[in-house]
Amino acid sequence: MVLITGGGSGLGRATALRVAAEGAAVAVLDINEAGGHDVVREIRETGGAAEFLRVDVGNRASVLDAVDAAHRRFGRIDVAVNGAGVTGQRAEIPDVTEDDWNRVVAINLNGVFFGMQAQLPIMAAQGGGSIVNIASILGVVGRANASAYVATKHAVVGLTKAAAFEWGTRNVRVNAVAPSYIPTPMTEPRLDADTWAALSAQHAFKRCGTPDDVAAMIAFLGSDDAKFLTAAVHLVDGGYTAG
Image: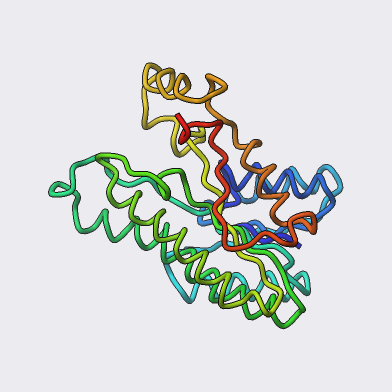
């Protein structure tokens, strides 16, 4: 069974559909009830097994309850994808509001931390599992006017490595994926067409990636083919950071 936070749209949705097509049952966790139910409906219409559970990843009790409910519903959690996220203000550091900073930290960082607090003991008790945290290329490099986002994604990378070393002897693998600029319902409206074109030109393929490109990496990291991969950040960036 694959549990996905942020599974109702964007990268989470693409991942849910990908792993369901490969035969996995899916627990779709999101604060976006309409989007989450749509993903579950789509999976079920193709014969798959899926359940929607509402979660506010910035609230520890909500996360613990939702993960526990998914575990009780399916009996195990083989793969957990912590993917809920927000972008935050586009502003220089002195102009970032405390409320926005706290909101980005609550969702992008605390949400991953709370998720792993719930997921790791379950996986260890069942004999192992795989956790994939969605970071970003901005967890590897910097960018102006995105301080909260950059800080939280760097923190997710560090948290991923710490968890991997804590839980490796209990057969739990923990990795992060670092996508580049992927058009999704969250990211696409924030940039105009000229900016997207300029970003596309900075990739080796001269295009931005798709949610399906990221979902393919996540599905691989959750599989037994990745059994010796842990504590690593896997770039899904079309060469962006190499240029």
